[in-house]
Amino acid sequence: MNVVTRNAALALVSVLAAGCAKFTDDGGMAPVTDSVRREIGRDAVKLSSPEDIRRARERVQALLAEPLSDESAVQIALLNNRGLQAAYNDLGISEADYVQSTLPPNPAISVGRTFGTASFVEFGFQLVGNLLAFATLPRKTEIAKREFEEARYRAVATTLSLTIDVRRAYIKAIAARQRLALLEQARQTADASAQMMKQLGETGAAGKLDQARVAAFYADLSVQVAQARLSVAATREALNRLLGVWGGDLGYTLPARLPPLPASADALADVEVEAMKRRVDLIILRYEIVTLAKSAGFVNATRYLSFLELGLGFRNEVETNDAGEQTSKNRYGLDLGIVIPVFDTGEARTVTAREIYMRAVNRLVERSVNARSEARIAYTTYRATYDIARFYQSRIVPLRRQISAEVLLRYNGMLVDVFEVLIEERERITADVASLDALRDYYLAVADLQAALIVGGTVPPSGVVNTTPPPETIPLGL
Image 1 (spheres, one colour):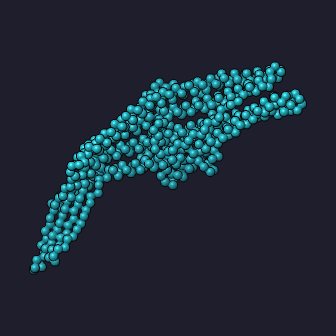
Image 2 (cartoon, rainbow, N blue to C red):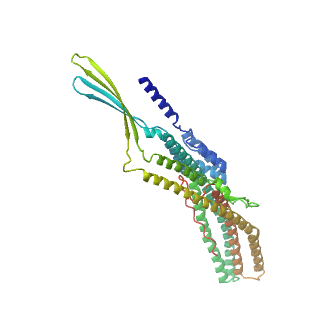
Image 3 (tube, rainbow, N blue to C red):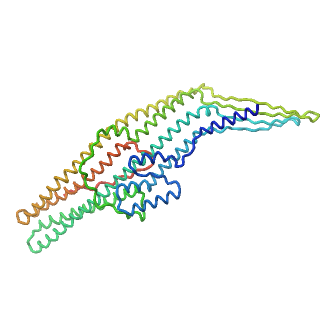
């Protein structure tokens, strides 16, 4: 009997141990890395050791040594943003929770010894285990596994969200530098005009009104240059935060200009279908719904039977008679503990689980509708900003330069006064700045379209706190 019992116990332990999950070598990062590489072609790395940190640091420094492109900026953020690394730590915690949930509950053992008269000694122990926990272990393991998979997709969403934020910050930083350069160049021209007008005024060839108008024009440009410098600092710091750089790494070089406008805009056949297939936030919600459905079924199955405990007891009694002879008796027994659902019938738990499930379903439907709308407006904005930027570059800016040149010729021929020259110069500068803003808006629309198709923007995954975007520079008010 003892041999049979021991073999049965060993067999039970072996079966339970075989069902236990094991930790992955990379903290569950393999699907995350594959998904990120498939979507954006970049490497997401979890820094788990000093050696990982050293290799990442060397790679970041190599990328910072070259002029920063949008792709290198994204890769630096993936390696250097510690908020992202904290999100990967959350994934590791989720894996630990999953592994923990697959472990059967530890049995409890109690040992006791009873002393009676001099002729009586009793020794016994009791092994107690939660039968309900053992019986429901496969279902709880399945639920925990799906929660772990959901956590992986959250890590993917966090990573992709960060890369899009980096692209936006990168575009804004370059556009701010380009605007500053444009305004400084215009101010140099205005400064030369102001100096010339001052000299003409000293000779009596220019009146005080013309001198004041030119000086005011120069002063207005000086204010806008100061605003542009502030914007350069703000946008660069926003990019610094996302890249995770500080100290000696702040000296990286950005391009002086945004990339030229492409020859044509991309045509997407059906952005709604594309968003439905790729949006990570929708995948997360689908996983959540299936997990909640299984949880609701589990709660319903254990509605009445919420506690079931089995105890296996052994007791050895030793008695000594007057002749000093001892007799030993072994006694075995079973104890069964169960909760009687007299007051708490589990109805509240069942209703709560059902409402939580339906809440997730309704949120998924809402999110799907919103995702379709976000994809449509993102694509519409992308095409519109392209057309606007193209129109500025092909029509408005050339016409303004032509008009400005013609007015200057007439001024030299003394056909118009300096006031009309200043008006046209202001209009030309305004057109140049607006053209630059249109180009910037186009590249921001590209990033927004990517966000609408792969990650969404209304339900941010946990992990990275996005930086507050820098304030837009004040437009020309001449």
